[in-house]
Length: 152
Image 1 (spheres, one colour):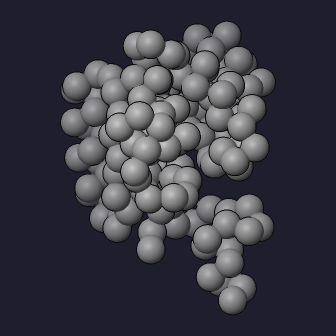
Image 2 (cartoon, rainbow, N blue to C red; image 1 turned 120 degrees about the vertical axis):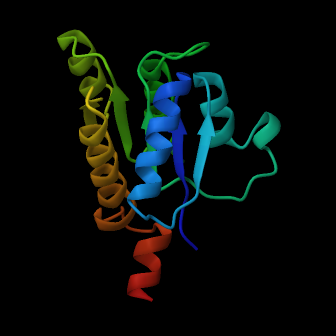
């Protein structure tokens, strides 16, 4: 069973473009979409409307920086502070090229910081590459589902 990709995006246009790009990459992973930082944490912690979701962490979190309720940086801080979530790869997917945002993201433990390209085809290519890398190629930490299956 493939782990889902968690997409945290509030902008309707960016959400649609990201979903199109992930579809074109032909990944078999489900994509779970939440629209704000609070919903992201509820999903990850299996709380609120996500209390009944299947057990397990996503393959990767694609996290927008500027979100309502809790910012991407606040979500990242919470994820890295939680022992059960700490090893989940987080990719900051944002339009911000502000050096302070990049520095803070890496200080908080982001795995990658990707600035959304303005040109659609470049955006599709960037998202497809991200999806393939984190959902297929990346070697997960010991004890994860993928590593256990390979070694079993």
